[in-house]
Length: 182
Image (cartoon, rainbow, N blue to C red):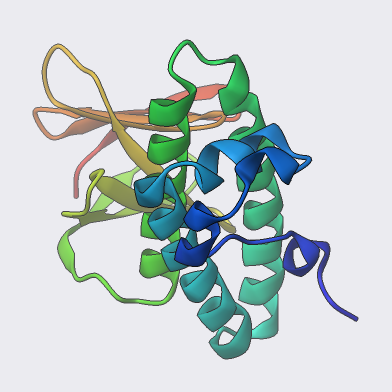
């Protein structure tokens, strides 16, 4: 049975030349009318297809869930003051997450932090936008660079990693931890 995420209508670069007003979904209309957004979604579609074909079953399920979350976030961009910029940022983040899952980008730094309950493993990537893959207990998440006064700060829903001078202030689903670097 096909994943619900596979049933999502995808646009190609050729879609830019069609009548975008005929599309039902407002996000689809925005993408259809912009060649850069259409190209981004074509790249995302290709990477997502590769992930579903090549990753182990558990990772395919995780990617399907993340794709559905991205799709929901994509629709939320219509409420943003800059829906075009929001959609471009959301799509760029999803592309980076897929590239990381497919091991298409090299890790430029790997760090282990000593947190009270379990070690926190962080793999940093020089992507656009910059990203970190966090492994904590039995969970893995990709977080993206966020503004900070000093140090490096990365965020994902319910998660924040803020490293400064070798100590990570780590928030994981409501728990706040201070984790020194090993």
